[in-house]
Image (cartoon, rainbow, N blue to C red):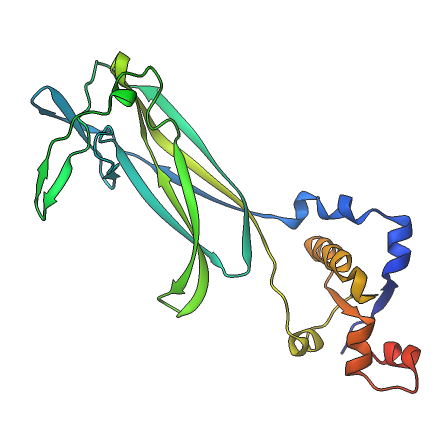
Length: 249
């Protein structure tokens, strides 16, 4: 049975309330968290340099830059999810010793490499390299298990920072990834008609964007809400005049 529908004319809402304040509430967002642990690195000597090996990690591949570990983590979200913020909290400590990390070698062919000269702007610096614990990119693609389009958040994690002039290594043994996101899924007309709702917001086409923001807020606090413009109602429902068509909706 259809729930009792409360009809609110948006113009009344705009007079008494500020929709911007409602939309900015954190209740409109979801948070995904993931913890990534790192094993202690293995240091391998090579001539006057050291190479670092870490389980589950690749390496930075820019020739002349320090060959430090890098781990790629791919997170999958629905296509309608919008990534708002990505944060990574790290647990770190300094490794004992003085290190001269080898520059990333230049590939020659399939299984062979050629050593490159270290980049002096990096190796002569007191600043940590790469200077950040992570970066990320967002890509659209197919989920191979469902063959549906999804949104991928691809994170590149750097568990070691190197201070070349001082020969120091700062190691991160744990990273906590936090992703704030929200869904912007839009229902088709047929889906909207089939769904029971507690609140119906009727507005003019010019004010629809404000009504949608209010709808997101109402849904975030557990009130199933639907937005309809007067033009949509006039086109979808019959009646002797416009007020009767609105009542039919």
